[in-house]
Amino acid sequence: MSKVKLSACLIVRNEQHLLPDCLHSIRQAVDEIIVVDTGSTDETIAIAKQAGAIVLEIPWNDDFAAARNLSLAHATGKWVLILDADERLDAESIPLLRKLVEGNDPYEGYFIRVEHVMGDGFDPIPMTVNPLLRLFRNREAYRFEGAIHEQIASVIIREKVDAVLAFTPIRVLHLGYQPHIVSGKDKIARNIHMLERIIETEGRQPFHLFNLAVERLRKGDDITALTLLREAREITPLSASFAHLMIKIEAWACARIGKIDEAVQLCTAGIKDFPDYTDLHFALAVYYDASGNRHAAIEAMREAARIGTPPSHYHTEGGVGTFRAHMQLGAWALEARAWREAARAFDAALAAEGCPAAAWLASVRLRRVQGDLPALSEAAAQWLQAQPQALRAALLSAAQHGGGSALDLPHATAAHNAPTPPVGSSVTPQAQPTAASAGSPASSAAKNPSRTSATVSLADLLADNNNTNNKHNNNLSTPSKHKQHVQPTMTNTPIAQALSSLSKADIALARLQQYPWSRTSAATSRLLLPLYALALSAQTKEAPTI
Image (tube, rainbow, N blue to C red; front, side, top):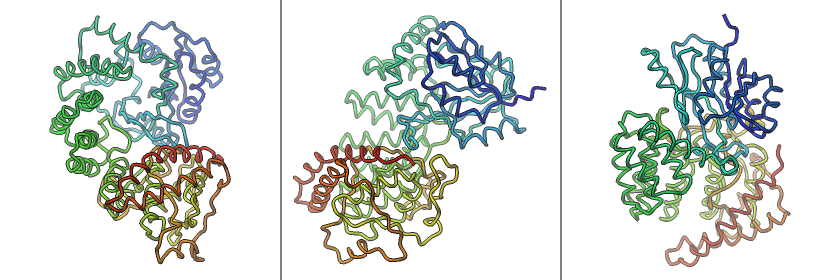
């Protein structure tokens, strides 16, 4: 009996820049690595061999399944893990992965969370999350089918009618949709060519039509994509694994060409068939708002937040049922001058896993504009304590711009006293749900609250309370001996000075916007926001890596 429990199987070509990190991520997780190279002309093969991989070289023949199956034929492990060079196995998933392959569970395979991310900062936020069957038993009958977007789940079910497949929280980060990678490899043109050829030979099957539509959308050919999506929807059963996703993408395609009412209709109809698919509720809220129906938009967004993260068999976008829904509700509350409602929404966002720095900035800015004390809410303080030191320092520095009082981090509880783990540590403080999020599956306490984006992308900006006429101001500027005083950093750089000037203008305009007669300030503020966000993003990148 083979002592090899788990074989990692990859197909590669000219991946010298991406392959090292992929192999590094699995070095402690797998027992052997099989790499099929389809014609590399760079250092890919040497890198794979240096990592101890078995390398098989074949010419590329426009067939992903054939290359996958060659790697399976040479794998000796009881289990197989399928990866690509532009993917990384999450380090915290390794213990569970080993437990599954060494255990006695009756499952034939496991779906894992493939998270498509758009950045590589402190911990990038997933753009979309797809459940894909990437871990399965190594049986001779289990071989991939499909020259492109190759599949194996249907093969396993066909070959073993009593096979049971399960979903796991194992995470794989996929970087391949980042613009510089897509353009550098010309993947869109390659995929369109292959899909059109397959449709000519195999017929207009719904899965092929759907995938071709997606590639056309990525290319910007919205009209052709929409035609393909409509054709595919007419012949796709609701039981198809991609049926829910096709509805969402068709609605998105309609919105892209200005057919907002049709996008609303598609989402509304889709929710009847997939009522627990959070993404459709989130999308419906966005399209309602675009059509001018803010009341319906808020109700739909609240429903997305109520459902929270959708069941694991759905393809979803990161945060649509958690921090993104709450942040949008907070933004709408700000527009309606519903300050307390906005504060509760931002606190709920901060309690959710993966919440970005923008929610923290929005929370602090709102409380300072209103003159609330302390400047940090309980949720904001807990979120900040959980961040990597470099990001925390940059945010605290940004919070002081404009001459405001220093932020004080309360540490009356054990959670606040807990040391912040280093970047990459698997031990992180546990965030507690706020009053706004208690009982809501969308805003439960973060299991790993350190997952954030280092670059601030929203214009939910903070500013000081230097000119706020509030009798409690002295409590902020004179921290008591029971509070930890955090000194701001990087305040003398040109970026910091520009940020300070923008912050002063922003805080003045924000206070004017509290009055119904102030419309000019709102328009002027919108001109400042992109500049402020750009400066803050640059400030964050200046933070030393610790």
